[in-house]
Length: 317
Ligand code: CP
Image 1 (cartoon, helix red, strand yellow):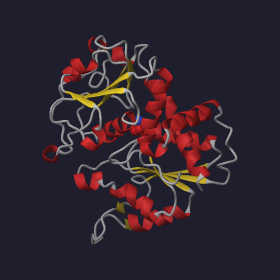
Image 2 (cartoon, rainbow, N blue to C red):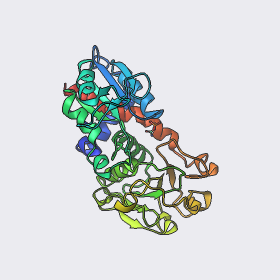
Image 3 (spheres, rainbow, N blue to C red):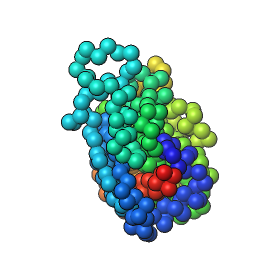
Image 4 (cartoon, protein in one colour):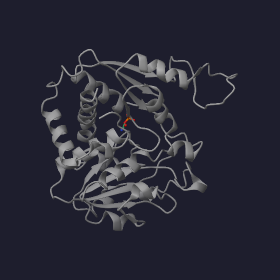
């Protein structure tokens, strides 16, 4: 594997799950693979899980790790080409990226959608510049349109917990006070569309996702109908995608919060969320603390997903 920006690059899913299982059961078996190799992790945005789990994955593989928070301690970076740099940004990304590439063997990048331009976000301008100019393998630690390491962890978790071959997965929008990118729901939809599971997406009108990600999922605007018989409930907020409202919060309708009453409609479903989660906006205290909540094993699998992907990148060096 050279770059990793989408779960589609995992290739054969059964093989990917088998590799992940091996990594989970033998976390230190490939220490020699990463010896004298350096991972550089670049954060344009905050993180808890991705930062810690990806570092842990690299350490398990014997790698050295450097972490750079672009907005804390580095020069402020200009990202637009053609700008007259007479403002507060002394360095351009187009020099910074190849310089960063000189100091490492692989680069992880976190760069969220900025909601300034739908075109720039959906063309993954920042992530693609790292791919184009760093000279090194690049993997997404959540970019503007996808969060593939999260999705791979989600899919591993579903594999581990599912009780039937083709579970019903419901991804539900839930309210949130701030505008959040579509990367997690896009990526989750992309991943579940690679399986033969029953897949339903539910959200209020106006929150339609890019059809390229929705794929074969059934869209149901009635959340209660969508939840009926679900085996897994994957909750997430996202801001509007449509051209007129791109990046906007259209409502904070708390009747969409995942509560005990909502979960009672399901087939005793497991509750999932990528975290961080706002309690009693996205999900009630009772649901996230219930035995059916698998948000912690889901987060733990972030190490497994990152290590499986990093191992493939190291094998490709
Ligand atoms: N789920 C996830 O990516 O968490 P962080 O934003 O804390 O990394």
